[in-house]
Image 1 (cartoon, one colour):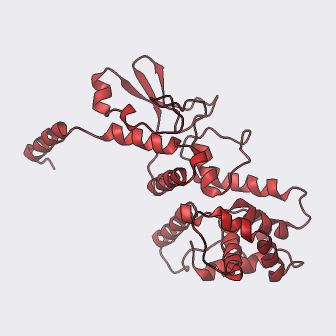
Image 2 (cartoon, helix red, strand yellow):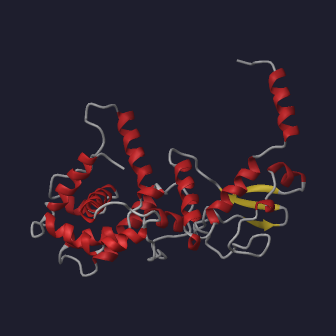
Image 3 (cartoon, helix red, strand yellow):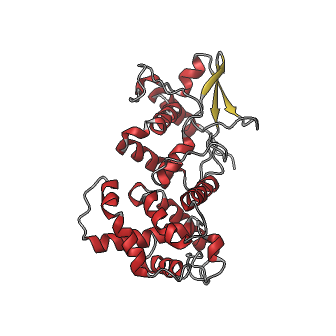
Length: 298
């Protein structure tokens, strides 16, 4: 995710948050969940216990700092939150670095179990909170909600789920449909039927009109809440394309492919969109001829 130097800086800062706990106590806490952490990953981890626990601790500390789960505590110590390049770098370079780090946090291969983050957070927090798990999860929710602020979501502060396993899983939950409408053309909820969807021109020729789903302020809707509002009118939430969009959806699809219990909502959505934007070979050839013959207008 980030450089090893940055991760060690985050660990050093976290150690300063609770002087009653030293490095060995943090490593001891990670060793208690080391076996469960190995089971969390699909591939077998060929790494000795000491090295694996060190990596979990460093990555966990880096994530806690990056998702701003410790902001209130970091105000009292020297903060490593500015993990961007040196002050001499340009604003564009700093933005690129920050964007790169945020994308890395949602890569499937970079996911860290929430129980690892909670184990570290418990030692940092000490006796300040009776329910440190809930406090940490709320902070992770706030991070995801900020990260996905441009996307329509069916989840808000009043209906946040509590069963997410890692950051990408939590992101996936925010994109799920707000209503039960997941039946494919064969009546199955576990398969994706690619033949269900048509090209946009075919929908148009059938008399179907596409409209943008607008948030009315009364109820939240998900990016996946696509439905017919009345005969012949298909309502689709708008999709914002930014620096993160491709990476987010690639990793959400990979997550669904490796986690059957997650369903296939995102995969189905992307297949639907890719079907819409396809054009027939005949139409593409005609378009190419028109474009090549059209005069250039400055």
